[in-house]
Length: 54
Image 1: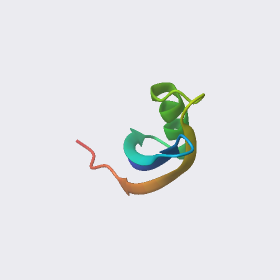
Image 2 (image 1 turned 180 degrees about the vertical axis):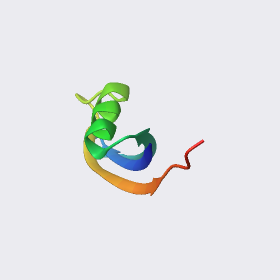
Image 3 (image 1 turned 90 degrees about the vertical axis):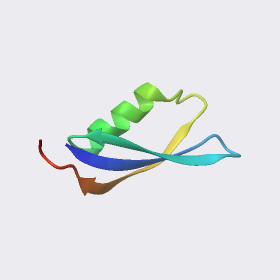
């Protein structure tokens, strides 16, 4: 798993969150699932680091 930083905006506010996913496409899909994309627009999905294997 890798850690991705997701930037979202509703037009006036902007915030960032972190999601773990195997790739950026999966991270984008997870962000769309967790946040109402009719209100929150996904601005960017960027890799922050690789998670440590357990």
